[in-house]
Amino acid sequence: MLKATETVLEINLTPLGNNYRYLKSKLQHNIKFLAVVKAYAYGSDSVEIAKELVKLGADYLAVAYVKEGVTLRDAGIKAPIIVLHPQSVNFKTLIDRCLEPSLYSPKIFKEFIEIAKENKQSKYPVHLKFNTGLNRLGFLEKDVDFISYKLKETTSIVVKSIFSHLVASEDEFEKDFSNSQIKAFKNISKKLFKTLDYQPILHMCNTSGILNFPEAHFDMVRSGIGLYGFSNIQKEQKHFTPIAILKSVISQIHTIEKGETVGYNRAFKSDGCLKSATIPIGHADGISRAYGNGKGWVTINGEKTPIIGNVCMDMIMVNITNIDCQEGDEVIIFGEVENAEKHAEKINSISYELITAISQRVKRVVYRK
Image 1 (cartoon, rainbow, N blue to C red):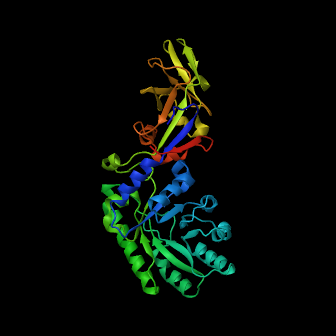
Image 2: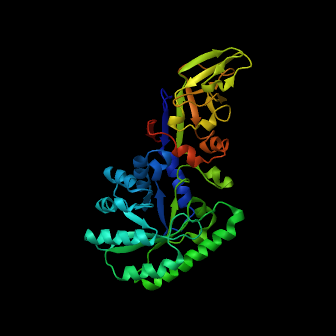
Image 3: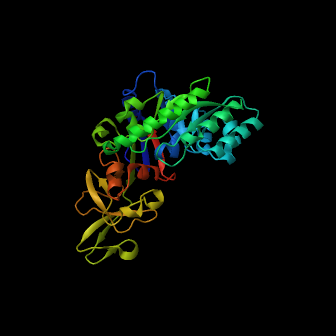
């Protein structure tokens, strides 16, 4: 790629394919793959990423909300799309766009059956989410009888899959809890199967589950963060490559004299003569104020340099005293080496938060290399 001339998020499809193939290598050949592309494909570009994942062979895509699924349909993507957290107000749109809802409570279950019936649907595919310990969304095991009864009295829907979510699949100290979740999910599935004359797809594993719990791969696995180049299992990170590089440029260079300050609230006070560079990216672009005052850094001409002063809405300032650079030079905010995970750790956060926070006003450039 050419050097940046403005703030830009470069998205490389080559490592996306490599990350996908590594995860697929952990699966038996008959196990399906669900690729999670919610939140603009973890802050990148949901349409381009989804198209590429379909080409790579992903069997399903998943988004969080109906609007995200509509965006993919508008882009011509025809692959099955699960909506993980649909709202009943959007059920009509969901059906019109052939999206498949995750149903997670008696209330939402009944409401969707009614909408499906009103819209003269027959065997509309739905996915049943069970809570086995995350306590976020999901039916409980005690709801199985209710679900079975409702399924017997309607032909408007058909259960395409049954799934749950591991709480701490990356944590070896929580292996017993993960195993208890897997056991609970098996029991729930067994009870439901007794009442159905068909067998839905079972899935439970996220990225870390794929790597740590092969016994829980069932019929399909789900991956989000792994596709984008991050592993929550430190020893596995070497097998993943971040797909995105956030770049910017030096807008202006200042000489700061001893005793002068930089930025709002005079948060940085110079104890000697130094040079600062102003870069056109700020908290409105996803660079949290928490990165100010030395917590965060950027890389210029191969050299790391700290952010000084408070992060502004549209700009940051960095100390370039010992760096050979000039106005217009490229700046790497995060990339493959100084990646989002390293930056996030500095403010007690995680890669997910940083990469999904990158504003949509930041230009996206998609390429292969």
